[in-house]
Image 1: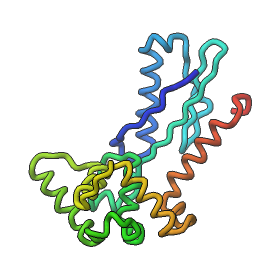
Image 2 (image 1 turned 60 degrees about the vertical axis):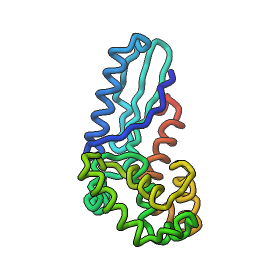
Image 3 (image 1 turned 90 degrees about the vertical axis):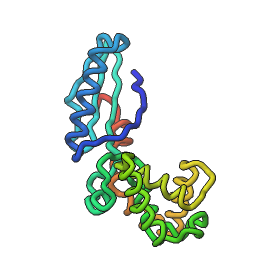
Length: 199
């Protein structure tokens, strides 16, 4: 039983609220979508941090693991930049805020780290004064792209930040910076790799 892979921005302040929201959305989809008629959700396999949802329908079994990938726990960055919507871009923005990583990306040389960090706040303030919403880290990554006058797509910038972060920080420090996310993804992989009989 396949479930669609999806990504979205979440606004809940903690993991438990986010997981609760996902469970409710999953239950509603099962109840309301004709293609899921006869499918039931078994909560017996749910874990505390990374929940595993077991779906059954007839003689078929499927699993969904929910991994909130944003970074709501980083109060310092979230408060400083007024971020209250969370997604994978949170981690990319944290790489851009690291002087060591930033200075390794040659595309950013014309701007400089101090100027870029100042522009994050200045541009965000101008946006807000004009009624534009700046509540996600993704907006700051896009501000960086504009300030540095980089032509490639935002995805290219993300790739350059990640590749240079590994070189600049070393593999262990890079992994430590992303540890909560990497740990959660590894646990999700482990849960999905376990045979159904052992759950």
